[in-house]
Length: 134
Image 1 (cartoon, rainbow, N blue to C red):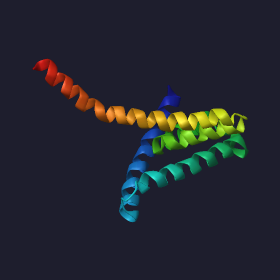
Image 2 (cartoon, rainbow, N blue to C red):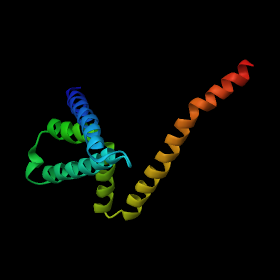
Image 3 (cartoon, rainbow, N blue to C red):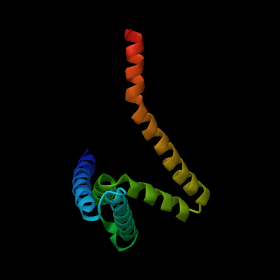
């Protein structure tokens, strides 16, 4: 249970950082593209990669609570894209480039499909409710 607390605290901190940095970056570079999100995803991917590399090397003796606070919590709260990127790299390093490509393709295609369906769901439910109630 203690490990979940570390992950939750890291996630809360990462989410606060993401929110604040997104607002600041959007003000700084404008909103023509979601630059805040793009830059946060890039930064989060770099940080989770650096931490994972550190924990494999000299930092491999770090307590599991510290690793999970930083990787699953802080980086995961900052951007789940960083976790996705690290998992894809893990597949590539394991000699599974096809599975890595499948992970990328499925994540993007199904993620876009899910967000579209989620976006359309309230309108569809309202239409169904009106037709049932009529």
